[in-house]
Image (cartoon, rainbow, N blue to C red; front, side):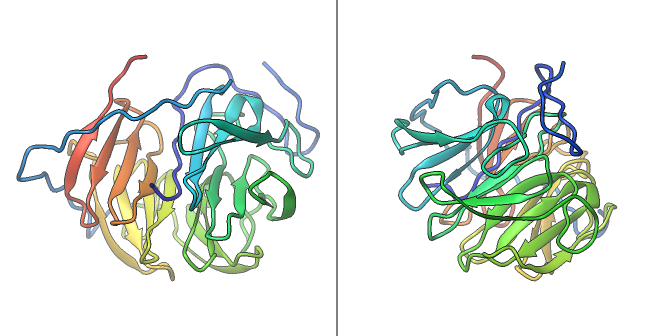
Length: 291
């Protein structure tokens, strides 16, 4: 199964636009950027498996747990839906609002928020109100942290959530152009990043994922690249550039990793998924515009 996945929806129907200051109501690189390394052999084929559809309206992010269950942010309904690995509906929770167990997702493009599940089955959900809420697998609220701002531990427009094997939680803090790391109880540990195109800098943060080695993989939208860091924020490598056919702008790329360290990138601008190995070699791609 894939690890934590963030899939971001492209522009579409009119959003819901609540205010952070009141109840929610519906209303109308510099040095190490390299080109993706193309495969020496033909791209590997991909087989269709299943479709999940249970009243979803603008699904914007998803995650899986160790049992293969799938948790989906149901954007227009401001809730979480849970399915088993065969796509059978299990449960759902949430409603629009800023209270405990409530969410706001679809308020502007790109979509704020993210979802991840740790090794214990704890589900972490970030939404428009710049907070992270934690739930058990049945949707029972456990605790929350975070508020709007740019100080340590504060968030301004989260672009994704990921967890590592030790339970640390990583948040893409898009408007602050940084990644923040928290322990499993929500205590701030560290942050890295700034605005720009150098190593460790970001222009419009996209999705975020963590592999089994603890490497943090980040979609860097307007720099048209993927950046990879260790768990302390040390830059390791990057791939993609605006001049190549690899990771491109126009929608922050959703990012996921599998058990072998392969990286999957969702590209909004041409409606497809691309698969890279852990060194940035393109393995395969699939998808296209249509229904």
